[in-house]
Image 1 (cartoon, rainbow, N blue to C red):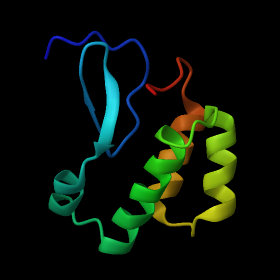
Image 2 (image 1 turned 180 degrees about the horizontal axis):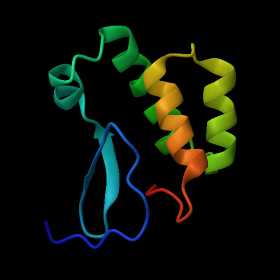
Image 3 (image 1 turned 60 degrees about the horizontal axis):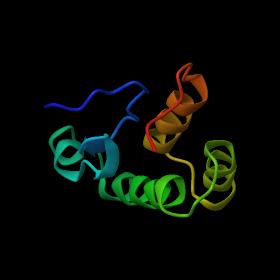
Image 4 (image 1 turned 90 degrees about the horizontal axis):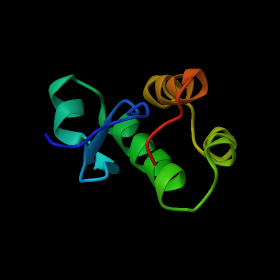
Length: 90
């Protein structure tokens, strides 16, 4: 509530803290929106690559494209990241 967010928050992610950081994947929100289990698992794997492996954003996007099975949710995440003008929260 008191975090100043100056970059874009990726879809499907939970942001918390001061300064704000992506903390995890919003599994409950995805369940409520009817996103299937396989897509949620792909997003969890994408989260690990983006935020836990130490890659730059561009390297992480390339790694996700190469190593993960494509699904609508991961494509939406990657399109958001690639279209971001301010960069994403890390």
